[in-house]
Image 1 (spheres, rainbow, N blue to C red):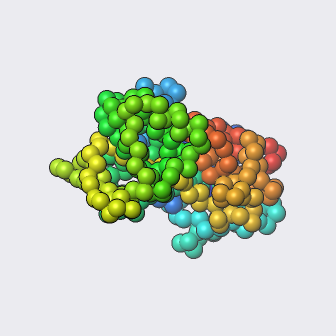
Image 2 (spheres, helix red, strand yellow):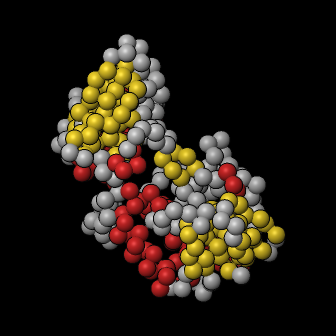
Length: 302
């Protein structure tokens, strides 16, 4: 039996493992796909303290090596639920495994809502981005498009408008849903171009690289190719918290409704990272959650 079982191998989960291990606890980390989470989609990361520049994959690899050196056990399986038996938590996977822990930290993360177009997955990190703070500097003086029309899309676009030669907004609805103030902040820039009622049909690829998107006006049916050097997709995030809704309260958007203490309504169950309701989702805030959740688990164990 483990002292702490961590569900999710992103920055929050690996930080939780690190802090648990440093406090003398036995830790198992279960990850369904690849250790590192969303950060592995970024070929260059320049906002992690202590690193001038590092790729998301290298950061994840170093973190993984660190927790393994500290004594973490890892399993590459998909967790489908946790059964609370009081002092024991049974973590179950789709592969049929069951792991026993005295506590559990859920750091399941989120996934970006995608457009669902052909060839999309291969372009993530190679023309398709999600975070202007992380990747905006790569497009200084260049043209980018932003898919989306809500607050998230406009926040990204405002940052991009200050760096890029041109920002093209592509919204599939007849109007933008972002707050009026955000719209004013964006469209005061003379390098911003907006398109509503616009459906993105496919990616325009040249020499194996993203060079634009093929779009269609939903009202007129007119089709055209919008040239751009990169596309920022901001059409929402999907938290992967459904399997744990009996253990922890979810808000209306499906995020864990836990405060900064990362505790849940179930003693011995803690949450951390992007899956928790919060305003800012960055690698640093995910790591902060992981540390808080692990220390709370250690306190519970004491």
